[in-house]
Length: 590
Ligand SMILES: Cc1cc2nc3c(=O)[nH]c(=O)nc-3n(C[C@H](O)[C@H](O)[C@H](O)COP(=O)(O)O)c2cc1C
Image 1 (cartoon, protein in one colour):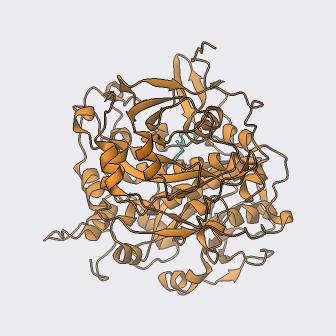
Image 2: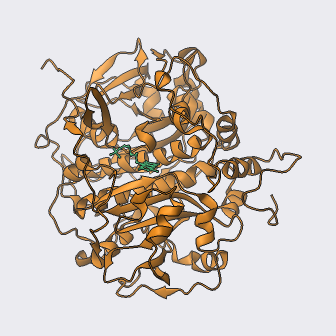
Image 3: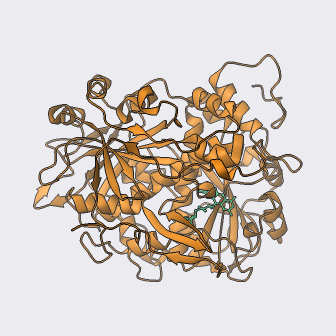
């Protein structure tokens, strides 16, 4: 695709088969415009609303204990999870796994209005449709009453379904280059769940949700003193083999699962006097797996057939398969990260400590999306700066020395924020910009309108690359470009996440396209929790008019593209809704 092409024109013939051109075509075709939304059914086909719970019929379900907040492992202070070494490390046990899945992917509540009830989860999801499924690959663990194998997480039951038993020595071989206590975590997406409502744009939303789930998993692990890194050197066929998503018989006549990613999790630190962070002389963690061992594991005995989620699919959106196919990661990469000898000191407490002494668990459990804001509540500049600081990955440090949760992300940051400031005490209203990697400042400036002024935001702490571009009331503009949603203007501030786009895709390949959304979802997850900790509330915004956003700052062609919007402010509760406990429906025999 040449630089001369307009950013929103339909693709010209002949159609390029280059995967990068194909994902760019998907991106352009699924933009919302003032006069035309991306294609979808246009109405909600309620009869065929997808079941939000995948189950594998015939697979044995192992219940995880439903732990009260004060049962071990008890959640640390919210601020402690961001500092390496402040949370004591838990051994891998049934209750620790239960806490991990609770904070990562479990139900957080049921909402009730009249006769209707619907569940919410710890991880947010566009339209509450929850396309993301979670998996775990466990080795033999002393004292853990679960066989080595692959398990699917069933959120409604809070249990693990055994998809395949893996011979202990083979799993040990698979994990032999990782630190002691390591196990694997995997995510897949059922595109149909989002496509049912959102049509062609759904591939974007599924990937935002993957990013949020990477975030909830990383943060859940941090509450247990565990470390997580994305195993992104693994090719996607290997992810499919290990998670069983390629097993045609198990998915015959039901909605497919798209294999997204794997991560390695390990307890880092001292457990029962044993140094677990380092296995002998392990100083490096590979971000790939031995494909031969995965092949052997996949050849074992599998259990269960996936359930059907909708009786009928009115429309099949081929372009989603096309984007998924074009962005399929064909090649493995021998990526390696180094484990640090010691961790750097966290930034000064006065800046990063939240004012209230919440536990991490409290914040994670209470996270909700605001459905409306009061158009009054603001945040202080100190709170605003703290939030901005939290989303800085500190790109000058080696990966494993970056602050949680950015240590999960084995890449340089490629998402920056254009911020509509409405109600931040001490800052004039207007348009601001956070450059998440200071090395990219010149590139970002050259990609946008040259007439913008780049003034460091007044009162901004040293080292925070936050700039003021324009002064003025940006409320109407924020609403207008966010598909006319008032939540973008009635908040304290809202923002668009701008990805370094075409250059990165051309340099790294089309498989990077979903990862742009993952990074934006991860960033959103950090701010969902930060908002709760600051006594306000957030909402992700997937519906925005793409090119009108780009015009606000004069983005040139496809250099930067807005992928996700977000808003934070004082919420207005919907008093018609009742909130019920997450697991009131589960009766356990103890
Ligand atoms: C990727 C993404 C996009 C979203 N887009 C919107 C949006 O455009 N407008 C909106 O009001 N809420 C949006 N939401 C919020 C969801 O509706 C919300 O997460 C879902 O209903 C579940 O509720 P909860 O976050 O309170 O658990 C979005 C959430 C995500 C994760």
